[in-house]
Image (cartoon, rainbow, N blue to C red; front, side):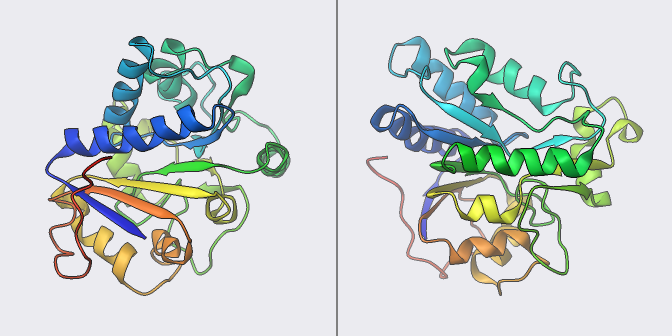
Length: 253
C-alpha cells in the first residue's frame, strides 16, 4: 500500500486526478470504477479541466459505478447516474454505451445484482477503481456486517450513512434507505485501487481501515490485502495515523 499525504483537499484532488489521467492516457481502453459523493468532486473537476485543454480523451474508456440508490430513476436529481452526468459524463467524450451504473428502479433486485456482476466480468474486470471512505468504513455502500459481501447486492443503509448523505436531499426523510452496491469481490479484483480521503472527521475511520484489524465491521480494512492500493489523503485525514506509515508527499504525481 502506498500512502500519499497532501496538504489539503485541492492538492488531494489534483494528485488523485494525476493517477486517473495517467491511467487513461497510457491505457485508453481502460475500465474505470467510479465513485460518487463529496470527496471525488474535486477530482472530476480536475479531469474535466484537463479534457477541455485537450490533455485527455475518454472516447475509449468504459466506466462502472460503485452504487445507486434503490427507488430513484436515472433522471432523479439525487440519483448517482444524474450526479455522474452533471459532474463528469455530460462534459467529456465518453460514449453513453460505455457508461454503466446499477438500475435503481430494477423490479427484480437479485436479477439486477446478477446482471451487474456479469457486466463487470464481461468487461474484463476493473483496471482502476476509485474509492471514497464512508464514516462507517464503507466502500461503495458496503456497510459494516458480519461478513464481507462478495457480490453486487441490495443493502440497507445504516442510520449514520443516511444522516451523512442527507445534505444531498431536501430532508433526511427523502434519503433512500436501500441501495445497490458493487460487492467487495469486484472491488478487490480491480487491478489497481485509488482511495481518496479528506478531512479530520475521517481521521479515526481511516486509521482503522489502514492500520486496524481486517474485519467486515470496517469494510475498507479489506484493502490491506489488495496488492496495489494507493491512498491519497490530506493531512487532516491522516492526522491520527502519524508514525504508522512512512509518509510520502507524492512528488512527481
